[in-house]
Each structure stands twice: as structure tokens, then as C-alpha cells.
Image (cartoon, rainbow, N blue to C red; front, side):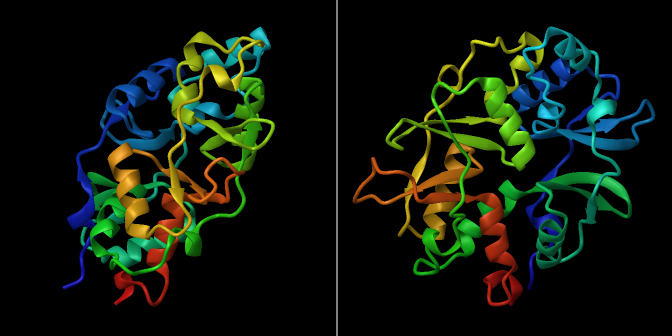
Length: 269
């Protein structure tokens, strides 16, 4: 029997008030280790969704104190995405995958007869596909993205944030002058600057975290397992025979979901 959305979703949702400041949203995202919150009015109706990526919109990391002051006065209602995309709990997972691909979203509200009951995200698909992918199925190299967003360690944090916002990437890879990987800067690394502000002298080397790498010949199952265990949405692809060379690309949760949507995927049978 085909799996349904309700078999994979996380029950319950995490919400914030429309009047929550961006700093308060950042605190909730960090506390719950999630990428998004649903915005609910005083009657409990969901009016939108705000993600860590939304917090970066509008170049809120600008070193211009006046611009930063304006951003600090914004609320969840000002930056949230609406209406909220949703799927019914009883539809097949394959249909939900198509919805993710078509809409280009990272998560969907799950409803039961229009009543919110949970959330399904890219991470949930990755966790499940780890058990569905056969041991000799396609490799990382077959589905990875060859284009990656990179910067040097001395790049200002504000510049990296602008690049992430304009490109639609959740993270930027930090490399040295020879292309050796130094680390990664993600939306989560930048959350604290919503409240603190980013000084003009702050560079990505000061805020980056270690990069997770995977060999280009590794299986998709290995990639999925690594993402699940480390709570990462993207891995840097390298050649294990020459690990210090410039990275070959990246594989993300989106790449794996796209694989699930293929007509010959185990999810479509």
C-alpha cells in the first residue's frame, strides 16, 4: 500500500504571533531547531509562514544603522509568506512530492478536512528515503548540483547575506585562495544578527561552521543518512582521492526530493 502524507508528517505545529519581532522569531527558530514558524492570529487562524530565509530578506544585515533600525521594527506579519501552502493528510506521498517540486517550497502544512494537524518538510522526505533507496541505487554524482555559491573567508557577512538572498541559496561555502574548503555559513549562523546587528568589520570566517563533505561516488542513502544525523540540508561534494581540491558541487534535500519525483523512482511505483 502506498504511503500517505500522514505517515510521514510531524504532528503539531509551532506558531508565533503576527506581532512577534524578527528577534523573537529568531529566538523561537533557534530554540526549536526548525526552519520556519506558522503565524497565527488571536483566534488561532494561520495567516502565514515565516522562515529563517525570510529573516534575511531586505538586506537586514546592512551595516547602515538606519536600515537596521527599520528592520528591527518589522514583525512576523511584515515578512511572512501567505497564503500558507497545504496538503491533506490522506493524499499519497507521491502527490505531495510533486507539490514540493512545482511550488519550490521547503515545507507544507498538513490538514485533515482543512484543520491543521501537522507539517511535512524536505527533511521528513530525506529521513524516509534513506530506508527506501536500494543499496546500489544512484550515487551522489548522479543528482548533485554542479553550481555552488562560494565566498572567501574575508568576505563581509553582509555581502554573504545579500548573495544568499539574491540567489535563493540557504548557505554559502567558504573557501581559501586555492579553493580549499574552510567552512559554511548558513541562515542559522546569521540568525543572531537580527537582534545584534552585523558590524561592517564582521567577516564570514567569524561566523562559519565546519562543512560536511561527501564523496561524489557515495550512494544517495549515505547522503540522506548524513543529512539526517547532522540536521543539514546540504552537503559539499568532493573527490575523496583529492579532498583538498576545489569542491565538485553540492547535494541538497531538494536534489533528493527531485529524485523521488522521477517516474522510475520507488516513490512513483
